[in-house]
Length: 287
Image 1 (cartoon, helix red, strand yellow):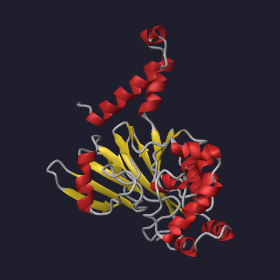
Image 2 (spheres, helix red, strand yellow):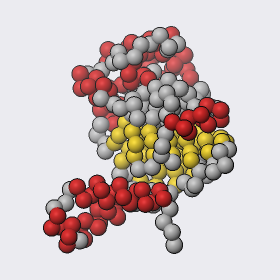
Image 3 (tube, helix red, strand yellow):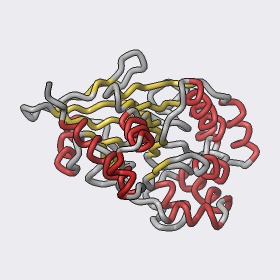
Image 4 (cartoon, one colour):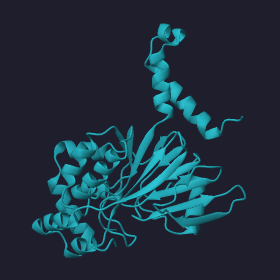
């Protein structure tokens, strides 16, 4: 029976990481502990989250749901931890408590002055200026050090798109098809649009798109995929529930989840801090 290329890639990556941490004598002996770590790596589950947007109630609800489902070994965050919402420091602080990787989003960089806000609409710009005043020095340092692109196993992680990691929205087949040329891995995970979508490029070069639905697991096969897990803190697909995905390396499956959270609590906190009314209202409708 042949082993899929993705499985071989994962196996090689896991073995490489594991052997770095063991003395040569232990590796030669083939201890059970070594092989237990290898098996653990091969059966890894990862949470895929994007666009937390300083919404602590939504982020906490997602993390609680992940724990109820059996937990994960690592969290993959696709950027925009801050912006729009009332809890930027708390969300950064909570994310850092988990074993995670995170790429930079446009709101993350704007909040620390690494990019301007001229491209933001007035409400987003006002929220960004408020966010900047809430960040601790540690928060700023964390955001400053976020990379634009991360490669994990056979996945490329970016916020906007592989072609333009900060600004480009991937919502159409035409833009997605062009972006497949800008990453080498089989799969790419993106945020920014706040909409759960899947773009597929098959062996004939045909690109198609579909909604990423909770009742259908996404099997990782031969096609190249660009996957968007939706938004944790500000969904925009007409469903106000927080959105995230789980990647199961053993099952070769990515599954989407939606989680209700205390929207009223987030809105009350936003009103307390005088954040723009439109940003408050949109959370009720998931737009």
